[in-house]
Length: 185
View 1 (cartoon, helix red, strand yellow):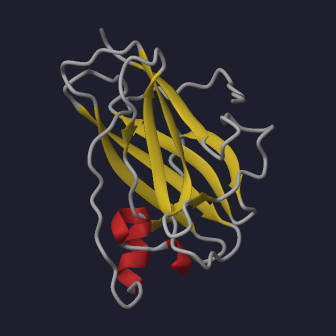
View 2: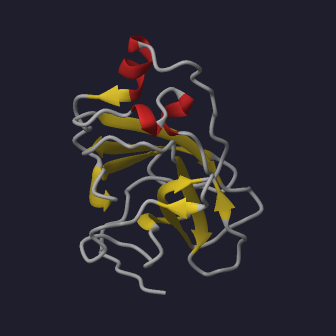
């Protein structure tokens, strides 16, 4: 397993929770597209730059609130820049892992943009905003958590390949280390 870590740590809280999965039957309406895309990335976002399959760039992320406390939820917002059209409908996989290895891994796999905008409907040039909630049980108190993510095709059980692994934090298995987040003790 290969880790390429930098000193960037999100100044916010990350953990596991539930993601709202909503189907968008028959295509995305203009209102749904406006709700799922942004024209600007918030200035306090942590920049990333991971390139997935030369089709999508993980541009940045934010986490609120700024410190993870057991028993509370945090909101993670991720921004994907569409470089080329995607034919498949990928899920966003999220793995939350205790850096000490004492907790079981938490999965927050979900459809992008709350299910409003499947990846097969992403248009080049758009920046898609994805938001989900994470939670750590009140009886758990790891020192820190690693938040991994990427795009996954559940039909083929394959991940969209990370094409610039030497430039971003990753584990060599197409999982991007979004952040290492400290947990209040």
